[in-house]
Image (cartoon, rainbow over all chains, first blue to last red; front, top):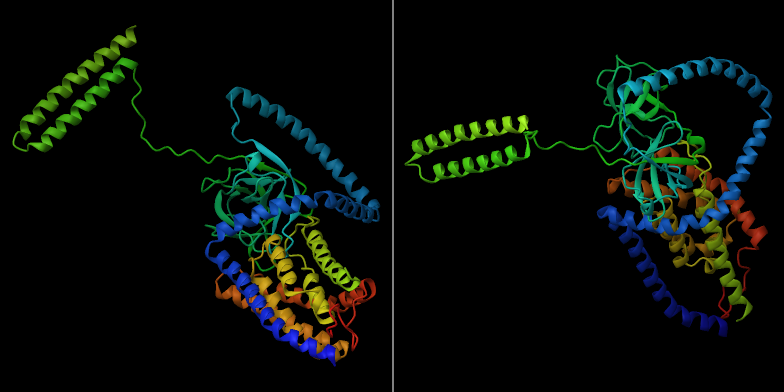
Length: 343
Length: 178
């Protein structure tokens, strides 16, 4: 009896307080959601910072679990070892022929490079990182790398594994960065299909093979064509292998990716500093003195033109003056150039 | 400290520990291919089971904290799923006395209904604010799998953690009826 009564009296205070707390929690959650919808970059930066703090601390535990899972997979593969062995032998035979061809091509390439004196782009260096986590959600395709701002990683840089493009950096923390994979629904990459040179857009749709969209002429391409990044938009370096074109069961053109999405472990982030934009028209190349004389001459002409604008009365006179000084200036410049050439 | 309070906080810590473990296994980069079958949302099943068994072990604040952390780490729109978790579990919590009387099969149906409502609301709200939504088929499949593992989660909670529906007349530390 007593217990029941004390219970009731405490309920009188507990219930309204509980309601207030629940209300506050609801407002907190909904507020966070709306804030994210309105000011996504700020919240995403907060998210990147939080993940930067939390997820690397899982590393000590995730390493043994991954080892174990790989061991189990390897053990399963023992069952198929006989078939695999035969297949590998056959492949080895083919590869020997390819190796011979490759050695010849390498020598030829070295000779041609020496002849051309080609220098490869020194800016296209890379930072290697280890995949430490994935998105954890079946609807978002992204992985977390253990390199971040302190390693100089920036948003938008291309990421590849040993063979092909994997994705782009989107979200950089201090010591981690997130790679949006090509299969994510938010991924759009401009690509070129070789050998026809058709431009297209690689669109991720949560499918293992991303779609090709906005293809100019689908008659010029056929399944099996190589797909490489095109570098349009200036964010991605051009010419990185993406994969091979295939036709899906629904008849739409897709790309079978070259990179091994089943086991992403080490990724290379390509440093790219954007393509340089040429803004001015080429300047006149002339010796020191001539250049100064030319500059003085240009200034004088500008002043004369300004005068002409100011007093419209003596317009013809000013034009005369300008043209005469122009002629004199040109003569002067040409003689000086000749002298410089003679010296 | 009396043993009942210690027990209460031990179970709350255990809840957070299990949620942490779920997060850990889900972010392990074991297979990053797209379009795989989504796993069940074990955290949701666990929370529902615990709310229906011992609501004082999983207070609303704890649920929201865990769900917000999941939202942020799993790259979901932050706050939305946490809000739906709060609404769903509060709905179950308010009917905890009723569901305690029901046989397990009906409890299962009840939880299934709540999960379906949460997934529908998630899709509707995301569509309403015009954000990319997860594919409907895959979310439905995930919801179905979540409901499918619910009995297993209940069994593990019962056998491994000794979590059962409060017996009639059982009292907490302050002598309140549960």
